[in-house]
Length: 194
Image 1 (cartoon, rainbow, N blue to C red):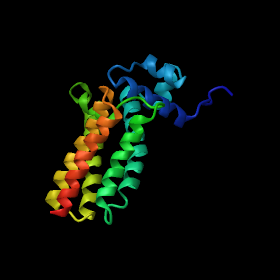
Image 2: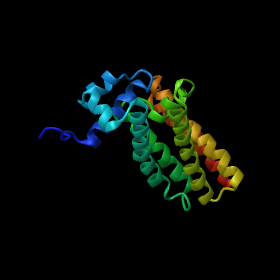
Image 3: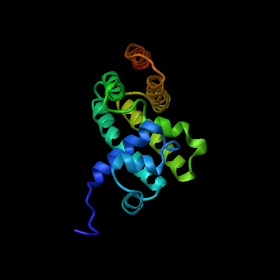
């Protein structure tokens, strides 16, 4: 039927997200998005928005998809804070190890590109990073840490989590990434014992 959309919006958004994740915002052209989604440029604009709007939707999709997994991992933090933080990192390590997904992390990539992004995209990236810190802080506080300890360890764990994505993209081995996680989990364990 003429004029009726003939594509699945979720599939198109997922394909666009993977394209942005693979090549980054700046290096993804509308032609790249057209190839990835199977939509022509006018369909992208009319259905998904301009590049910034589409990227923000993809960033939200990514944050929601992995945010749910991080929340599930941290759900046992009140009774088992060390296991919860280890499970949090496992979400990232599993994503990194998945051969069907691009290397790294869409949020980490976006954060590194903040100086060249539009103000709205840069603010969105900062907000996504902030959600990760807040998620960790709440879990660590539920696990018995003071406000100050929970904040310090949440900032550290969020930074380590983002560094795992950067290190994986730079070629770090799974053993090296596990060792990085081990140092952070050991530090948390020591803080809880103190």
